[in-house]
Length: 139
Image (cartoon, rainbow, N blue to C red; front, side, top):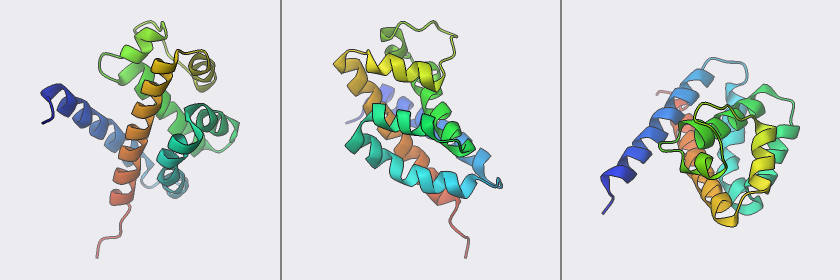
């Protein structure tokens, strides 16, 4: 049985993902973002968070940076309690960009890295699910 704390985290993830996906709607890049986010949970699981972050950083498209910034912001700033940010020594209101995040996860302890990777997969799955649902054509 899930605890109330776990439910709250799932609820907050869903809220954050929904807000992000709603901002994609009606944009010229929203469809591309949807196509990208459909494959990212599996990419992180297979290739690892470091490789996916580095790949997104390398891309010059707005939607790549948008998704990367969303994930980094969630993991390091918005996630309740931010235990992972505390482990990496981040201040409460400090912003973390993708390059800084990449260097932090490369140097992180294994347990911290694996926790970040797990949370990234779960949040990307939420983005994928909601983006797909909101982009279905009404019949």
